[in-house]
Image 1 (spheres, rainbow, N blue to C red):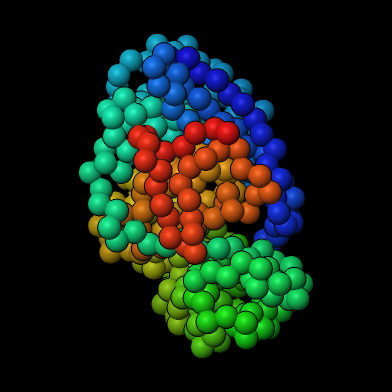
Image 2 (image 1 turned 180 degrees about the vertical axis):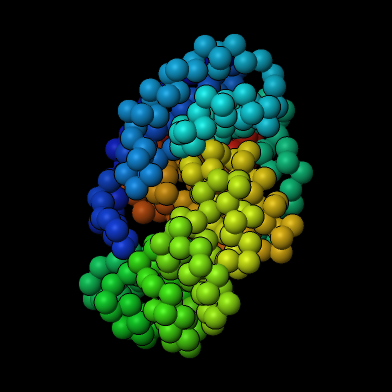
Length: 336
């Protein structure tokens, strides 16, 4: 099996701002695994918050190339276990490899990935569309520019309630709020009262990731469900989030790919927690991978490719929130 690593700078349609950073482009790494007959594709984003660069991913993957090239016909679960000891300190790199191998393996089986997993896609949730932090006028314009049934609104400003109040004047669509660790305990509880009246469905990660006493207090007193993101990165975090959050938002790059994401979601469902998968401004490679986890989800945020000026791949499509699979095997994606 041969491996090819390619980096891309994906330019965004609009400057994307959350509570801690702004950016106009996203640097991503595409992994291709070729067994001579099929090619598997995987993707991971760089991310300064988690200390992950393209260079670091390439360096870490390059250190295990011989192991990868000598891999023969093991399951994706066994491939993940094989790679984890070498890449446990770079889950983003592991994600790109795991996704590429899972894509390749299900193609070799002649199945779409959700078919390989024996999942039914009849009751898939629809994806939200994200509105990043900006002036209220520009946030309203972004909402009007993209009519959508569910919006995820990034907050973490001094005008958060004012923003939602104004946005609500322009649509009856469902709102989801993501504060990206910017709020305090009392602020979150107080905001939950007002946001519930404004048609908000849930609040995502209002407090700093490690504020577990605060998470518990918010869990017990918020008028809206609270979903963990930064507090739920890898598999052990699911149990930590139990009785501190109402649900978890799993990111493939943070947990090490599809294999571990599926385990996390199944554990959360076992604990009667709400389940969600989010994206990190991936191209259609990463977004198409997420689509095969939809049968396990209550909510999904997979609009990353929609935020790009130009995609680098053709994969699943999203029309008014509804996700459609391509009629090709694996994760259903090809590079353009």
